[in-house]
Amino acid sequence: MAAAAESKVKRLKIKARHNNCDEVSFRKAKRNKSKNLGTSMPENLNERLFNFAVKVLNFLKSLPRTPEMNVIRYQLAKCSTSSGANYSPRQT
Image (cartoon, rainbow, N blue to C red; front, side):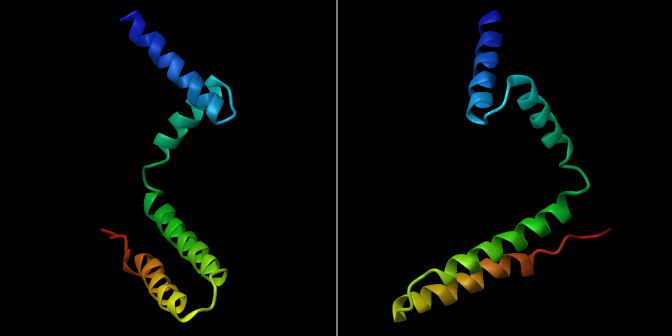
């Protein structure tokens, strides 16, 4: 049992080091993240879908202007923005 606890602490320290923070603040952030998944999720998802579409559209501006890339640009623009348009949180 003690080996499992030591292993868990070791994994937390590695994750904390990877995220450039100490173990305690990493645990707090992880706890807060799981608490924030309640009622604000639909608004959060709307924002994330909108931000995703904006990022994709900005990326598409950097693609070269060739006939092949125009087809890809058109299709990617349509599918990346449709996810936000198709998402509608139910309010019951």
